[in-house]
Image 1 (cartoon, one colour):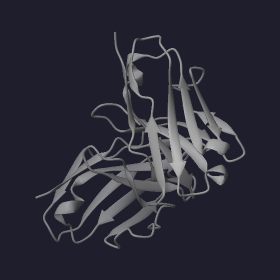
Image 2: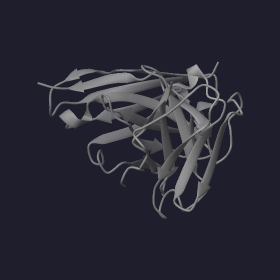
Image 3: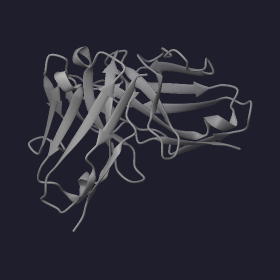
Image 4: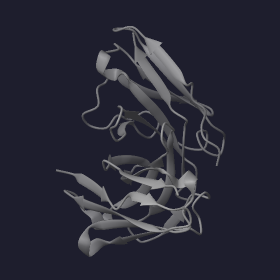
Length: 110
Length: 116
């Protein structure tokens, strides 16, 4: 499977909102409600932030939200904070117990 | 505390073999679906392999025929046997539990370097 397409970088000032897009195909992102998003700080393991397109795990701030339209999923972070600076990866279930990740987006909080 | 701890990484020559292990604690391992996910230096995440609670197994095309995933529920452990290693297999290898089609539990990772 081909990797999902994410912008290499996004930036925003504290308090602002940013959106990271994740584009796939009708075989992965567009096929079912199975997109997830991960936050990864340098040298750390990824952390699940959004699952099933729009759901937040317990303990994840409600400043993080997910959405999807067709073959493109999006992660929105509102009220940006310094600790949000990290790499973000989208991931989609691609059928028959296989998954495909996006290339990752580096978020810089200015 | 829910925890996954990987071990077994190291430096291996091209064509060599290595087995990674992942010890689970704090949750019911035997009923959990488990995966290996890797991250090459400075690169993104790549799903490698899945083993379900009923032992159904799947692999990414990039490792099919070379890697073997297995589990020992009595030891709460997940394994990845890696053969015919290539330079492009160099990465941090994470074990990860999945639920609701997402990877909700991650280990800290173990580093594999394939180089002569």
